[in-house]
Length: 293
Image 1 (spheres, rainbow, N blue to C red):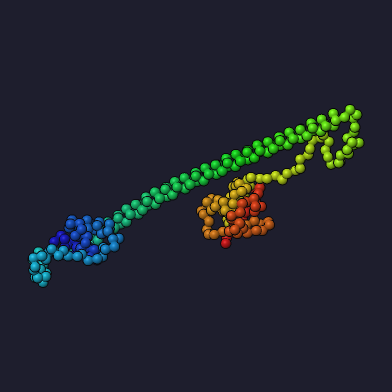
Image 2: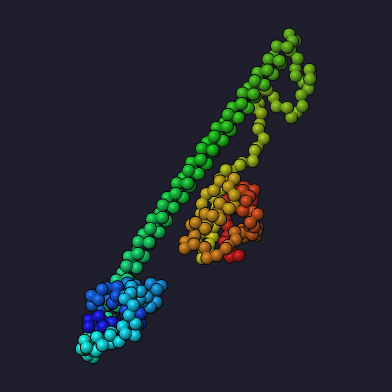
């Protein structure tokens, strides 16, 4: 009687007969609340609406199905089962709605906790990625400083070699002109020197050399007017600048974009992305503008 009452109550509440039968059978006829809990937990199962397959062992006695059905009807009639009153139906329906609301609230809270945990993981990964990028930038800056120090040392050694050579040349000329003969002969009478030849006492003037930069400062203006600034090595490719913009753009780029200069106006192509900044004329500093493709 209680099983039929729970089954009928579930059907009257709006559940399909197949779902109601599965819930009653799965909970071992422990009451309508257990059945409703089972329905709420399994409402997304792919086979929830499939009918229950009867066990073939139940009919192993070989009885006629019609006889079994007649016996079941007779038992049902003799059981004296009473139907739910309107008040009981309303109470059961109200209980079902409370359970549904409770399950829905529990699901929302669970999903909220999952979203919070996912956001924590995303922020943690973002912080780790930022720390890795910062470490890489520091390593690049240290390497650039070390390269610059080596270049300065090589330049200093080269200047020392030039000064030593000048000193040796001056000593050789002084020795040649000072002790070659007993009668001093003026250099102009013996062999006139060209006017451009420097005298032994005057230092040789080095020709001015063009200054070379191994770093450059790039400022990138975004679509919203904000700007990003970063120092790159002169031999780095323009693709490194584009990657830096993609990683540090607040909120991320909305779509593909180009890099260009305003004066002289030049839109850099995919082929330019493989070229070093020095070759593109962006050293020692430049301002790039982001434009949508």
